[in-house]
Image (cartoon, rainbow, N blue to C red):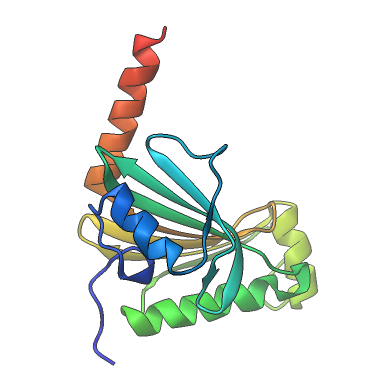
Length: 175
């Protein structure tokens, strides 16, 4: 398979409009959470990605241009590491094998522990898993949080910086 340039999920290009994202996600049976969405953020429920259910997917826009997509996956605690490993393998296959894979273990944990023990270490903040794929001003981040969530984030750094600047300017106006 030919390696793909970085886009957000479902072949949505960074810089796409909210209307374009809405039209693509409507074909995936996504349900827009209007209470959690605003002029710069669309939050969707009921979407599968790479064969896995998500708790939600957030699309972040800077000047009506897609800047970041963040997915939080629904998974049983016992399948947490399998999901992380499977997504990492699929991303390596789609893009390239990243050398930015990080696994940090603090005492009393180590990499030879069984997955059930590792999950306890993740939950206590003593084990960390993350992987990154860099594409110039775009990136993908996959991580397991201490809340035992698997998070996958696609980001265009220039556009997300614009979103942050606009949000900060708006906040400063309201001070």
